[in-house]
Length: 225
Image (cartoon, rainbow, N blue to C red):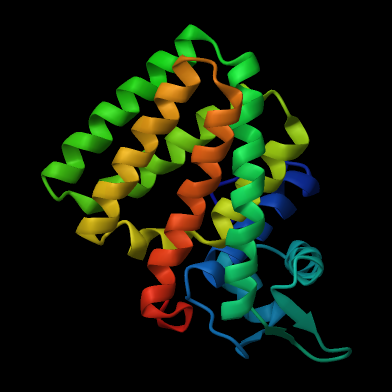
């Protein structure tokens, strides 16, 4: 068994590499590793209970995503995302979320509508009760269903990655009572447009929903996150 509880004899190196990559990416995005921190293969391999090979492969993939910089014959260094990077991600995401919602209007099923209704019932409930720690997961589920309903594998892949990149910011943003209340209203408006299969309205509302988020964050300054 390796450090993830995986039987090495039954797990191929690609799935192991994927687990190591996602673990390391989450550590960077969550703030465990800070900008300019060194990531040493031996240290990480020992922490995760794996060989250096999947760690090395994960570092290469993280470099492609712009999260680390590999120094030849030395360790990798965390680069992370700058405040401008985060702002750009939100702006790009606003257009992609709009497109996704528009496509979802063409494909969404009644079962998916019902799932969104259930999520929004819970989102409204926890917002009123000020249970802010519940909202990030519900927000994830709300958007995931719309991604699925878009029936676009490529668009979903990009948006899921962007969701991971801004996870820490989203958590802080949704812990703000005023923003949480507005977010709930925006979700309900998007849901109604999806019910009506109004693609243009759903696109505009989903686009504005993300812009409202970045505007709220900009009040504090992205550096604060």
